[in-house]
Amino acid sequence: MKKSQKNILGIDWGSKYVWTAYWNSAANIVMPIWYLQNDPSLFFNLGDIISRYNIGTIVVGLPKDKKVAPQVEEFIKWVKFIAGEIPVEVEDEEYSSVEANAQKSHMNKDHLTDTLAAMIILQRYLKRFDWLSNWNV
Image (cartoon, rainbow, N blue to C red; front, side):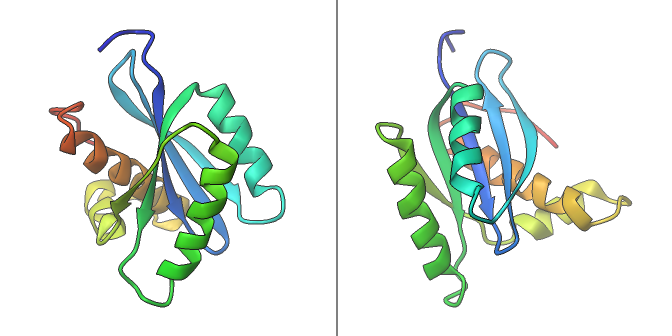
């Protein structure tokens, strides 16, 4: 990987919070950013993250739940709008929270699980392209 390569943003959408993590291409590591309130300031704050973290690709977790998926698909349309030329990909988020719970073991669920879920969504995407070989939370 070249150090000049852009980073990748991972997003786990929620009706109250939107959880974020990013892959630092120079260090080849996935790091949590934390969460954003899912309120009118969401896309302004997301734009700030895209700029601040030098994002070149955005990956959004897409649930299979037929009640939630349309809301996430609408969210993705808005992300594409604010991202402009930056590609927006989707990754299956099924069981990412379950996997996060298994990885965090004895810690409290609360915000950590959803942060880890955003990291796992991004990890799955990176592994598909063999950009991240032996990363563990």
